[in-house]
Image (cartoon, rainbow, N blue to C red; front, side, top):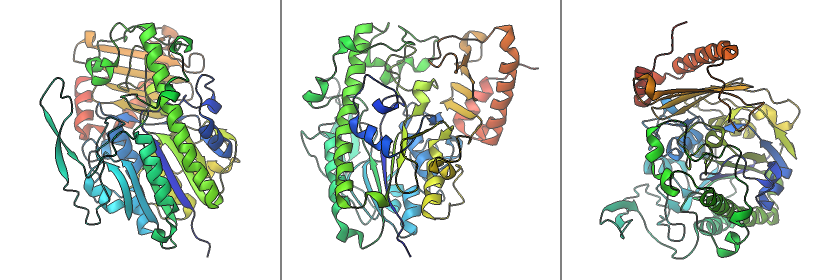
Length: 474
C-alpha cells in the first residue's frame, strides 16, 4: 500500500490576499510564492469569517485548526477543547509524524495533544521579530515554563507572563522558524518511516515590521502607489479605531506615512518569501516534492491605509480575504480557482485528500473535488462575515452588505452595500438608493439565516450584537 503524502502547512500572520506578485500585484516581489502558485492551485476568494475579538488571529487559527465556525469555538479560540479534534491531532491519530513550529495562539493543552515533535514554539500573539521567546518541545505536555517580561520598559513596569525556554538573540523570526523547519523535515530518522504533517506558523509579516536591511531597500516608499480606497479616516465612529493596530499611523492618515507602512509591509513579505523559498528548495532537493502537499495561507488580512484602517478590525475585502495556495499530488498546476471558501474548509479538504475520516466535530466543507482543475469553481454561494460585537455582513457572487452597530441609537448605526463586480475596492456605498432596496432586504434575510444556522446568539459576542441590533420590519 502506498504511503500517504506528506503535508506541509504554512501559515503567515496578517498577510492580505493581494500580496503575491504572480496573483496580480505588480508592486511586490514574491518569486518563491510565484513558483508555488505555478506548481499548484491558488484560491482567489479564500476568506476568514472574521473574528470574535480584536486579536483576529486567535479565533482565525482556532477555526483553521478545528474546522469550526467562530461561534462554536470555546470562547474566543484561546483554547481548543478535547472534544474539538484539531487538524494535526487528526493526522497524528492516523499515523502521521506531526511537527509543530512557530506561533501557537490556541492553548498549550491543544498543542500538546496535536504534535509528536516540535521546536521554536511561540505561545503568544506577537513579539519583537529579532528576539522571540520560544519553547522547546515538551513530551510531557506540561509547558509550565512561564517567566516574566517587561515588554514596554521605556514607558511602564508592567510585566507579562510568557512561556519561554530559550532565545536566539538577533535572529529574525522568519529565519529562525525556517531553519527549524528544514532541520525537522530533514531528520527522516525521527519520522520513523511515517508520513510527515508539518504545521509551520510564521510571525511575519505582523508588526513590528522589521526585516533585514536589504529587503527594506527593495521598496522606495515614494514609488509605492496608494490603494484606490485610501482614506484619511474611517467612515464610522467605530470604537475599535482606538485598537492598538490603529496607532501604527496617526489620524488623519497621511499619504507619505501610509506609503512607508506599505513599503515595510511588502518588505516583510519579500523577506518571508525568501525564507519560504529556502524551505521549498529543501523539499525539492529531498526528492519528496512529488509526494508532499504544500498549503500556504494567512490567518487574516490587513488594511494598511485602506478605508482609513491600519489593522484588521473590519470585514472589508482587505480584512477577510487571504492568500491560499495548494500544491502537490493530484492538484492542478498554474490554476486559479474563484470558489468562495473559508479557511476552516481546509481541515476536511486535507482529510479527503489523504484518505482520513473527517472528525464529527468538524463543520467545514471539503473542497477537494475542485483541486483537479476539472470541476469549476462552484462551492459556497454566500459568505457570512463577522467582527466582534460590532459588525456583521454577507457577501454573495456580486454584492456585499455590511452592518455596523456601535450602540442602540441610529447615530451609532451604519449600513454599506457594495457591488463587488463594479467596485472591487468597495468605494461607493449603494445603500439608500431605492433601486437596491430589494437586494438589501434579501441580504438581510440571509444574514438572519446564518445567525441562526451558526447559533450565534448562544455566543457572548453574537448575543451582544443581535441584542442591540434589530433588522427593520418588512
